[in-house]
Figure: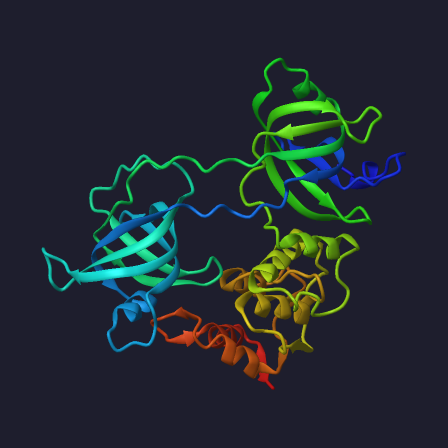
Length: 391
């Protein structure tokens, strides 16, 4: 599908979104275009607070530190992922949002283990059937989606296996749509509660794709568009998961003018805003130049005060403003393997490296090694053959 065939129309306002569907052969098919979309930016609703008991725990990392009487750390753990494993792999998982340690005591069956009472909101990615393997292992990971470190394991979690109602859905309004025949066929159906899905491609003013979002065509209402003519407005009952947060709106406005061409445009944003910035760079990962090796790349470290900022600055140093070079440790490691614009070996001159060294001193991605995130990234670069010069 050629985007250029669909980004222009004879109206007084631009096309900002395309509707695209991938067929069974993997070919992208054009389903329609829209002037705008309302409801694409949504902040997640926090789950209600619950009290759970991590039963028979062997705590490590931040959870162990939170329970140490002599430690200066608090019982505020942030998000904790609970994974249920069999002997080989995780089978189920939950996120305990904004976890707080409320109390702890020795386990009755084994005093060498601890029962830890926590308060948290429980997020469940899907409705698990709660059937456990014969010998389940409950593994705990604390931190963020970018930096999650092991926090121990336990024999069970009281209060986890309960039915929870699905969070309320937030509609998505497609404004000023011109539907192609596949979408028209869906709109003609008497019953529109269908499982067809499409991708919304958000475009910048040059007709380049900024972002792709999957959404089911659960059509709640169709009506003549507020923009007039033959256009229609379509309301989808649920705009889908993983929509950008409200913080992303001004970032999208920046990118709408065109992909960034100067460095540090991400710097004024919070860590969450910088994560939204990285999401937009990921959309363009297939547009990178051919790999080039050698030479010296200069990283401007003045604004590297959090993990997303590190990856924003690293990508700009290696492939330029708006480029993609991973959003977290694992993705960054994959990019160092080639195919993303840079090939080993090369030299990285990290200017103002002490900013990141200080800011990320307490962000520990590998408790066993005791390295901060900054140190871990530097060690990874060196192991891969990069000459790192900290300035």
